[in-house]
Amino acid sequence: MAAASAVSTEARLWRDFVVLRQRVDRALEQRLQRDAGISVADFEILTTLCRADDGQLRPGSLGELLGWEKSRLSHQVTRMEARGLVARRDCPTDQRGTWVTITDSGHSAAAAAMAGHAEVLKDSFSALSGEERITFETVVGDLVRGTSGTECTGSGISD
Amino acid sequence: MAAASAVSTEARLWRDFVVLRQRVDRALEQRLQRDAGISVADFEILTTLCRADDGQLRPGSLGELLGWEKSRLSHQVTRMEARGLVARRDCPTDQRGTWVTITDSGHSAAAAAMAGHAEVLKDSFSALSGEERITFETVVGDLVRGTSGTECTGSGISD
DNA sequence: GAAGATTGACTGTTCAATCTTT
DNA sequence: AAAGATTGAACAGTCAATCTTC
Image (cartoon, each protein chain N blue to C red):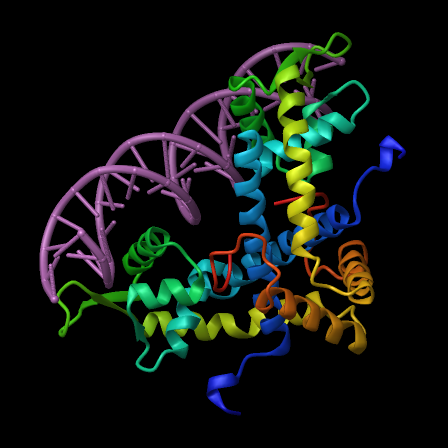
């Protein structure tokens, strides 16, 4: 009941979690900027498009895969289009829709960013023992895919 | 070498991590809004001020405790001041400085928010076994406090 | 000039409104 | 009217410049 340390276990865990997230994110942001002149958001768009069959995806699918809001995705694509990393193409079968395509320039940027991105993540978790890492992966994976969310509606990747 | 699953272990872990963070954060945001009409950022300012001796802190200390940039803190305090949650008072001993004080209204809001905040966090991690939770706490705590950051400059709490 | 803090401009995110095609 | 998507205004966060007091 000591007022000074009346912080629950979950609260401390969550604080650490948030700090860790912030720190790794900052490192990723710096590294991607240095290696390829892109942001983490750019990187996620580009790699998601890369994984798609023809290097193109509908805004709806792209947003769902990333767990982003429609408008955020649209704004992001607009900015990336202006920089030549992606392009919008009209959809032939459905006149309402468009395709977001990765350009050559986008491919180059993604390629330039890959190694550094992986390295930052590797370094960020290198302090863990093999056993610790496995538990960590299991726990986080279970929380994300299990029925643990309080009011979870979103379902995807990233920020 | 299968292209489809050429995602490193760390990358998968990180993706899950980010999704989890996003999900819990969203739940917290909704709950605080509903219970007390405040944001997570508001909540962190208020609770940090509550923990301080006289319910007041210098912007510098407050920012350091939270791990926020000076300007972010200043903007946030300005917004909260406009809503009557905190107040700025001139510092008597050092004319350069100010004190950020929590108001009665701020105290009420914090009080209204506490229970829901704790509940969301408890629920968010309730799926873990006792053992899992301990490892999770240990691992995250070690990563945050150990020498694991790639290029870590920041040091504090929260987003 | 350095410390404490604020300001303004710019980038990114969200929310609600809109537009077009089905 | 619903689906697919974009737009614009409002809000939050970052960066560099500024202002005052020490």
